[in-house]
Length: 88
Image (tube, rainbow, N blue to C red):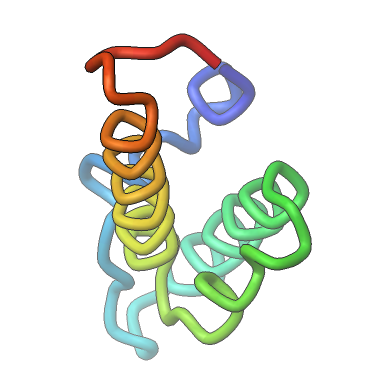
């Protein structure tokens, strides 16, 4: 909710997913926003998950990595439960 409320969701899925050229006058603004998004993602995950977002070039890449990890985790929980859907 924070990223949506602060107008940062577009860094994950939207118009600001990719960085402008470094010579573009908007680059510093994009970089500042991108850094905030990655910081927010890092604060929201457990320490062992930080390796999935540590060396990314853009927030979109971090988001994609986390989605893969969490999707795999959910799938594994479904199979381990033996009963299909489970609630956390």
